[in-house]
Length: 230
Image 1 (tube, helix red, strand yellow):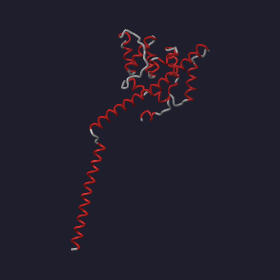
Image 2 (cartoon, rainbow, N blue to C red):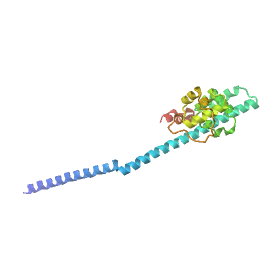
Image 3 (cartoon, rainbow, N blue to C red):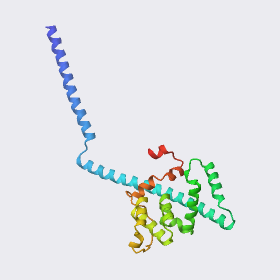
Image 4 (cartoon, rainbow, N blue to C red):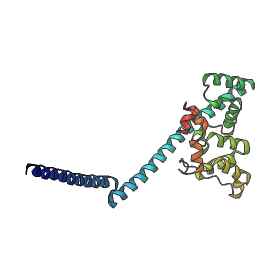
């Protein structure tokens, strides 16, 4: 009789344990489903919020890289103007460019933008846009290699300004800019220079992607190639 009672008691305990386990598992699964599978209203709101956050991140990143790019291009323009000034007013010869390149490279070994060739582009930039208002013009917002393309391929100041403005407006990559120049976009459009309103390149444009990969910007900020790939 005692044995029968113990057996019955153990069975009841085991049954209660199994029931508790089943119930606990059910509630745990319900809680997980509640956390992981929000209702439609919550999910719709979250998706809208996420989309808005992604756009905000992209806009902020683009504003940041555009700001840094403008600082870099302005620095290059200032260096070019000072090279011109010393060569024209003080009679310094062409050798100053090579010496300056060596000295700047020694001072900033991680920056690739101070080669003799690049310093000559800086001088050409200051010749092409001689006025201090340059920093407020479309060209000051373009990546450096876009500017080099304009300097190489366009000699007329009005056309250079037109192509710079259209590049910023439409978000042209350097390859597209080159194609537009070579196919005479300025002539086909009638060459009207419109008033420029300071703006950012389109977020998803080729120009924006080019700016985000501009190597001289990363050098300017002291970032390594690993940081660029991160």
